Length: 145
Image 1 (cartoon, rainbow, N blue to C red):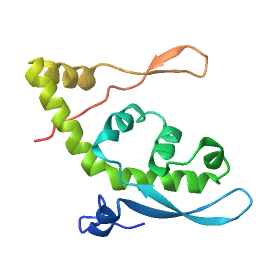
Image 2: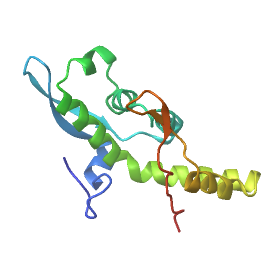
Image 3: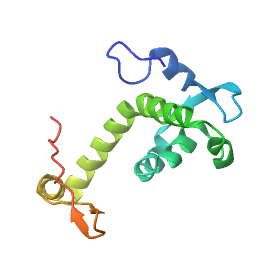
Image 4: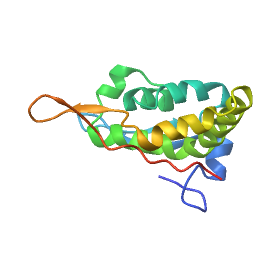
């Protein structure tokens, strides 16, 4: 795994290459080096849509198919997601901020409503030991800048 001077985001070489690399092992123990794509602007919507699904993220980052990914050992699957997140997070974060800013221009107050919702309302429930649904603690976000 590589990193830039701050330890986050792609290195200059990865940006020029458009990819990082991670060593993976399949369930038979065979090792290969896999390119982890630095996604272009045209794929940011797909990256946003995949945020809740790490398998989908891994397929997007590698350009490989589900069968190939399923044949990897769990540590390799996780390494792909972590490396893809590292390589893409800085560009994705800037893209997402621009998107929120454009949305705010079109719908003033939408950003405050979004952060207000996330700052005090339980968003997800999960089954308790007795099978009943319970609320998870509220998410606390602090807007950037």
